[in-house]
Image (cartoon, rainbow, N blue to C red; front, side, top):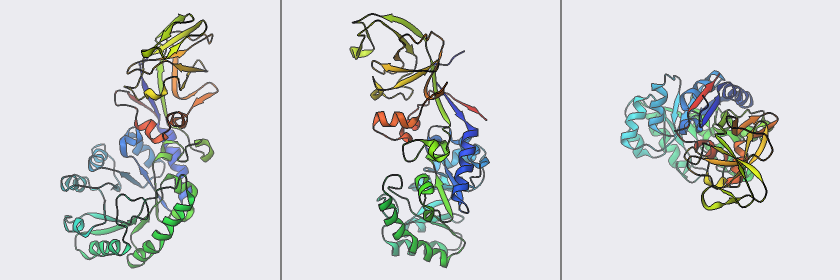
Length: 361
C-alpha cells in the first residue's frame, strides 16, 4: 500500500559519505554530527551508518540526544556540544558523554569522571569565551582536578561555507592557542572543522573534524553534493491520489492561487506543510512523477499539494518524488533551499515526525 508521505533513508549512502569524509580528513579522525534527529534522517540509524563508514566520534547538541544514542545501543565517544543546565548535565554524565566548558564556574560544578573539551570563541559569537587567557585557565583547571580529564580544545567556524577570509581569521586566532594547550597536554584532541571546513581547508583538520550536513550527502556550500562525491541519503516520497480535468478559469487550492489558463489535468498528492513541504513552495516547486518534472501549483496546504499533470500521462497511484531522483531527473534539498531562501539543513530538519522513515542498507 502506498503511504501518503514517506522519507526513504539510504544508510549505505551515509556510510559511503562518512568513508569519503574520513579519507578527506585523514589522518584526522571523523566525528559525525547526528543532532536534530540526524538532521531529519533518524539519529540512531544514521549514527550506526556513520560509524560503519569510519566515524570514531559522534556529536550532538543536547544531553537528551546523548541519552538517545546510548539507549539506541551506540557505543564510542559522544560529545555534547551545547550549553548544559545542571539538570541536563546530570543526563549527559549518565550517558557517558563528553561536555564542553568555557567558564571556571562550570568546571567547579562538574562531578568526577567527566571528559571536558574547552571552547574558544574565535568568531561565531555564541558559546565559548572570546578570551584566550580565560580558555587556558579553564583548561588548566580541568587538567589540575583529580577526577576530570581534559579531552579537547575546540572552536567553531562561522563562515567556512561562504567566506574563506573570515575562516582564515578564525584559524589565526585558534591555532596558536590550541597548539599551546596541545603542547602542555599532548593527549587532547584539537578540533574545529565542520563539513565546509573539512572539504575546503586542510589546515582546519587538526586531530578531529566534526561533519554534519555532508555525512547525509548534502552540500555545505548549498550547490551540488556530487561536486564533492557526496550522495544524498534522503528521498521524500508521496503518490498521486487523484487526477481531475481543469478547464480555463478553474482553480486549485486555498485562495485560488492557481487558476488554469488552458485545459489541463491537476493531480493531488496527500502531503503538505504538516509533513514539511513548506507553504512558501506554493507555485514554487516541482515534483517528479513517472520521470517527468511537474510544477507544483496552488497553495501548499497542511495535508495536500496539487501539481499540473498536463499531458504527462500521470494517473492515480503513481509514485511522486518531492526530494530525490526518478528516471533521469533529480530534485535536491539544495533546490528547495534556493527556492525557499534558506539552507538544506532546514529542509531535511523540517520534515515532520508524522512522515515515517524507512531505511535501506
